[in-house]
Image (cartoon, rainbow over all chains, first blue to last red; front, side, top):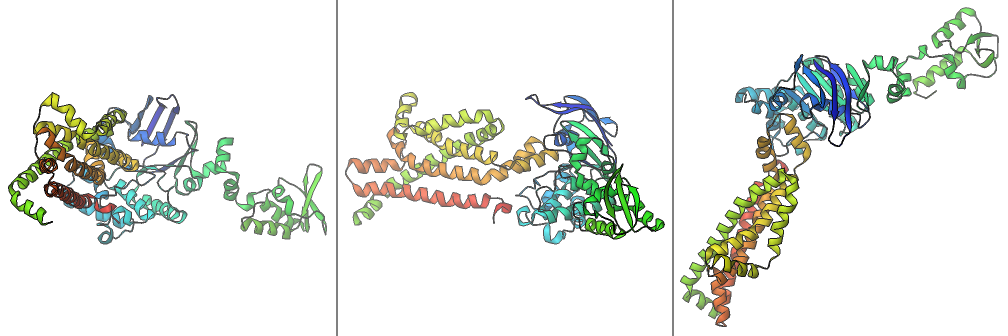
Amino acid sequence: MIRFEQVTKRFQDGTEALKDVSVVFPTHKLTVVIGPSGCGKTTLMRMVNKLETPTAGDIFIDEKSITGLDEVQLRRSIGYVIQRIGLFPHMTIEDNVSLVPRLLEWPKDRTAKRVEELLELVGLEPEVYKERYPLELSGGQQQRVGVVRALAGNPNIILMDEPFSALDPISREQLQDDLRNLQREIQKTIVFVTHDMDEALKIADMVVVMRDGKIEQVGSPQELISEPANEFVRSFIGPNRINRQRSFGERKLKEFISIFTGEPLGDALQVSGEMKIDDAFSELETSGHSYLQIVDGDRILAYASDRDLVKAALLKEEGEKV
Amino acid sequence: MRNFFDTLVSRQDMIQDAFLEHIYLSFVAVAIGIAIALPTGIIIARYRRYAEPVIGVTAIFQTIPSLALFGFLVPILGIGSPTALIALIIYALLPILRNTYTGITGVDGSTIEAGRGMGMTRTQILRQIELPLALPFIMAGIRTATVLTVGIATLATFVGAGGLGDIIYRGLQSYNNALVLAGALPVALLAIGFDLILKWIEKRATPKGLKN
């Protein structure tokens, strides 16, 4: 568990990157820190391995303050994956992956075994890739190496700073899936920084939304979508994503007025525009009416038959914005 | 042409001595130049605010005409090979210093950031990342410095430090073109020879992963 206690970071030029931030990153969970650029998310992450030090407040790993810890030792015990991959171009894949074990002075055979194990873990045949150099690999393969390099020393904590943002969309999707599967297996405490909401909702156990050095909301992806804490979080997630997540049956009749008919061709039952689609279907069925007259107070908004409701559902399926 | 070969044969001993002297002067000057410029380059790459003034000073030295520099040094240091060596070292500094600095500062920041984040100390980053990646640049600087020094060392004769300049000077004074050529040709061959050897080393020094 990583705990931030009232952490403030002021840079020399006076900008406050973090303002009195308290947050907990639970053990064995993948926590995504997300926010617009300049919100302090990267600074927050870089404090965990002391690449930045707090101006005020303290950070605890398993309830032990990191302030007194030696930064070099601390960093060797924490995995670190950076945005631009940062593999060492003059070292073979094997040398890249084995860097931390070598810094920790593991025995040679243990290191060699670990490298093979890790490369297999991300689907890179050790015999083929061990002796290669980073520039001979594709971007996606390079970042796979970047990820396992962070795992090499068997750290409990892994920090990932927008690790997939430089990749093409297909490799990115692939690596996100792989990370999810990998995490199921390795169960590390992962702090993952990104500005991509789709990525966050896809991979996170927990999401921390930040703005201007402050935390706006902490919650699971589902919680974020169903109960955005404020207007900022709602707009940052985006109304499209919120709507997409809500099932069609939960939506209200008044949202579909534009595709319903103006005049009834049969007898109509008066219902409120606030009625849910699910309820509207059953209402039509049980009452025996062929049309619903949708009203807002005294005002008639539209008429809808069961066919119109199906049409709305189909349009929704096709992803049309209604 | 026959005249030239006759000169080569008749003055063989003298030419050989001068040739060895020339190699000695150039070699020692470059070696000391490396010993000074390489660490300085590493230091100014770490403390970058000093880079500009330090490189600036060596660049000013470079602009002093070589004959004038030898002239300046004689009243201070007298004549002899130390004077010649100091002048040659001064000229060797800039290419090595500047290339060391450029090589190290040119290393991609993300690789250094990765090294730091994974718990490498500054010395480990310097030795395992920065220097290997900067090595081709540093070697290129040494090559430039060597070729430059071999050329300028012909002027060492004016401060009585010998070298192939002796032969050329003597040939000029006695209007003996064959003798001038017997001094100038070895200088040119020496420069080309060093250039080729160092170019080969430079290629070998390029980390394998950076070659295509």
